[in-house]
Amino acid sequence: MPWYAIRTVYQFGLKSDGKNVFEERIVCFEAADWAEVHAKAWEEADHYAKMHDFAVHSQQEAYEQDGDALIDGYEIWSQLFESKQSLNQFYDNRYKRYKYSPEEKYFSEKARD
Image (cartoon, rainbow, N blue to C red; front, side):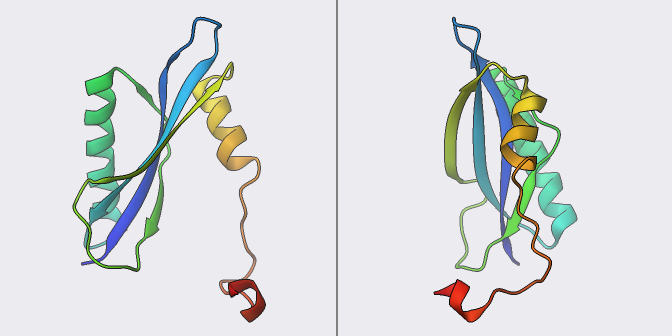
């Protein structure tokens, strides 16, 4: 079965200066298909958020891994951010505002180098 990396954004906390702190967290799962991986990812995200009393953004991003098998649910990346924006504002500005959407599904040979 393929492995997938899933990115979820959390509202980590609030600083004394009023800035929100956000966590962008990526974990990986083995799954038969996209539906299964999203079900696993939402279950894990809900558990993680409840365990730490975080808010969870309603959208996740997924990427099908093309390497060797990994350990289910292993965190492969995490980063914290601070901002006075709400969770939804932060998400939109961070991920939607500059999101790259290629018109073609391939890259030129030069772009791969």
